[in-house]
Amino acid sequence: MKPILSSLSSVNSWLGNNDNREEDQPVRLLQVSLLRALIAVTETVPQFLVPFLGEILSPLGLPSWALRQESVDGDNAVKSMSESLDRALAIGTPARQLIPASSEAIQKALSKEHDGMGWREAKSIFTIMKSSIEFSPRSEINPVIGRLINALLLGYGYDKDIKGKTELLCSANECLLAIVMKLSENQLRPLYARLREWRGDIDESGMENTSYSRRYAFWSLSAALSKELRSIFLPCLSTVIGDAVTELDFAVNRLCDSSHLSKTSGGKKRRRLDHSGKNDAGLSDLDELSPLQPLLLSLELALKADAHEGGGWVRSDDGQRYNAILNPLGKLLEANIPPNFPVDSSSGENKSSEISPFQQLVSGVGTTEHGNVIACLTALAAAAGNEQLWKPLNHAILQACGNDSRSEVRKAGASALLTIIQTLGEEYMVLLPECLPILSELLEDSDEEIASIAKECIRQGEELLGESLDDSLI
Image (cartoon, rainbow, N blue to C red; front, side, top):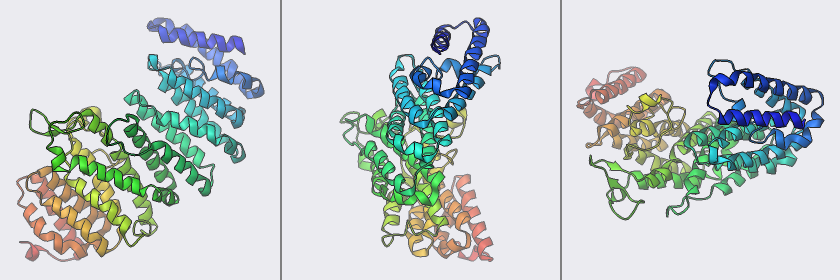
C-alpha cells in the first residue's frame, strides 16, 4: 500500500506544479493505474486500508484536485476513477473508522490554504463522508456524530475564498442532510441547537469578523433542512424564530432607516453617498447583511410547508409570530439596496450585471431559488389564510405601491400584489376593494411596466369575481 500511496502523492504533486499540458497524458495513465489498484484493494480486502486512511485522505491523496479537475481534452478517466474509489471506500470502510479520518482530513485540507486548493480537497472529502453516511446503518452513525459535527463546522466556517465558500457550503449541507436522514426527530433538535450555538449572534460593533459568515452559513443550512424536511423542521425553526426576526430588523435598520442611510461619517460602519448621490454601503455593512437572503429563503420554504399543513405554525400565539415576521418583511419592500449588494442569483454573470440588486433581492428577478422579499411575503400570505391577518400585509404592499419617489418600489409593490392574487385566488378578493384606488393610480403611472402590472391585477380580479371593475376604478 505504501508504494502505491507514495506514488499517487508524488504524481499529484507534480501535476500541481507543472503547467505543461502536453506532458499530462502519460501521467494521467499512471494515475488511472494507481487508482485502479486502490479500488481493487478496497473492494477485496478493505480492512487493509484502515491503517492508511490518513494517507489516502491527505491533501495529495484521493481528495487532490489533480484527480478531480476536468481534462482539457475531454478525457475524464482520472476523475471518473477517483469517484469510483470514493464510492468503494465509503462502502467498504466502516463509518466508525472512515468518519474520524475524514474529519481530520478536512481540517488538514482547510489549513493548507497557501495554494488556494484546500477548499476543493475538503469538498471531495465531504463527498466521501456523505456516501459513507448513506451506506452505513444508523447504529454506526450515532457514535461518530460528534466527529461529523466538527467536520461540518469546519466547512461552514470557511470564508477565505468566495467561490470556495459557496461550493463548500453546498457540500456541507448535502452531508448534513445525509446525517439528518439517519436521526430521529428527537435527535434533530439538539443537533440544530448545536449549530445555532456555533452561529452566535449579530455583532453590531463589527469587531467580530466571523459573525456574518457564520450567520450566512446557518441560515443557508436552515433553508436546506427546511426544503428537505418541510413541516418536520418547523419545531426546530420555532427555536430560532426570534433570531430570524432580529436578523430582519437588523436589515431594516441598515436598509430602510433614513437616519442610518444619511450618515456620512463615523468610520466604515456608517452609510456614505457615492459620487452619483445614491446610497451605498461600506464593505463591512454589506458583509453584515449577507445572511439576509438565505434567511428569506429559509422562511419562505418553512411558510410554504406550513401553508400546506394549514398555517397553524405561523398563526400560533394569537398571530404574534405572523406579525413579528410581517412587520420588518413589509418594510423591506421599500429598502434602499446598495448597487454593490452581494446577491446570489440564478442569472448568468453578464445578465446579473444588468439587473439591480433591488430587483433581485426584493422583486425576485433571477432569485427564485435563492430567496427574495416578494416570494417570502407571498408564502407568508398563503400560510396566514384569513382576512384579519391579510389586512396588515395588504397595507404594507399598498404602501409600497404608493411610493411617489421610487418607481422600483411601486413596481415591487404591484408585483407583490399580482403574485399574491395569483397564489391565493378568489380568497384574496375580499381585499380587492382596498386595492382598487391605488391600482387606478398605477394605471396612469409613467412607467409602462408598472401600469401593465396594475392592469393585470385588475384583469385577474375581474376574472375571479366574474364581473367588471370599471365602475369601481377612480
